[in-house]
Length: 72
Image (cartoon, rainbow, N blue to C red; front, side):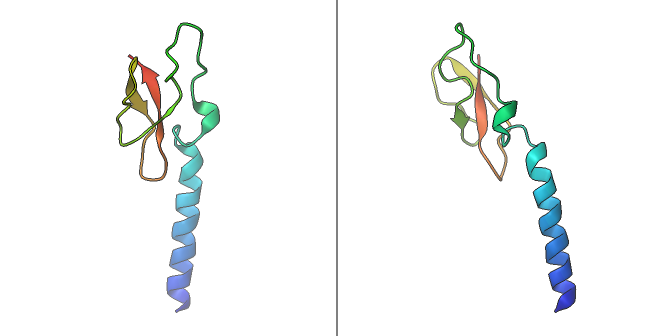
């Protein structure tokens, strides 16, 4: 029983350490919108698709969190 608990803790620590390294999960890594950018830049996107007009890229989407839209 202890062996499984140790493996579970190690697994959770590894997953936890990977979370900040993903750019889509870190709101500070998202680009700042300039006056010439469309409003959708930096908005959450789902499953690698940004369905807003003026934005067509989705950066950082993964299993743990949504990514953010980039302009065309």
